[in-house]
Length: 236
Image (tube, rainbow, N blue to C red):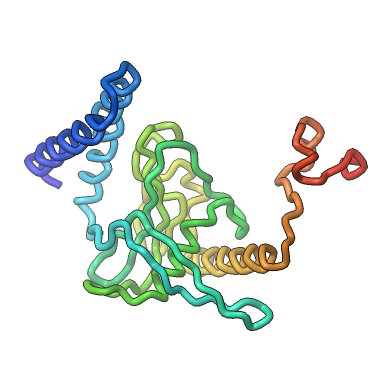
């Protein structure tokens, strides 16, 4: 994105914002949120797009609906997953990044195979298996990114939470040591996340909704034991 392109993009964003916020009453909150979007979120977005413009990656899918991804469960049952991916950027070789826009907090990268990041790896697998209606095919997932538009998590808007260090140079990441993965490790994370999706679906089909907190110690402070079925004996 050149300086001229950036100014055109800024004007376009301003027009869209004014039209969208114009649908609501002219309150103090409305004006405050509109100003925050224009002065903070839009500028962070434009900064990230300017930096991305210096690379070989370009947006190739926006709001991409995938409605026919087939998934076979352990008992042989075939189900369909549906999803809508905010954005996919790709280069000419079919290497691609899955991008999700965020205005709040999001999961961070971990040093282990098990990741708190779940949606983006599943989307990457779905994208690889789904033939696009038009345009270049997607051959290899090399990055999973959140656009941290509000600035609550990362100093940079495009936070590459997981990426293939063998395919990409250093990327902007809030957890750089944990975000860099080898091609083998990133592929394993994608497979592990899809296995987690299967397990979750099988649990739903079996009506298994037992509480499984990440840290059972916090249960002693929770007042919702009636909802989850946990008892004081479970904490001992």
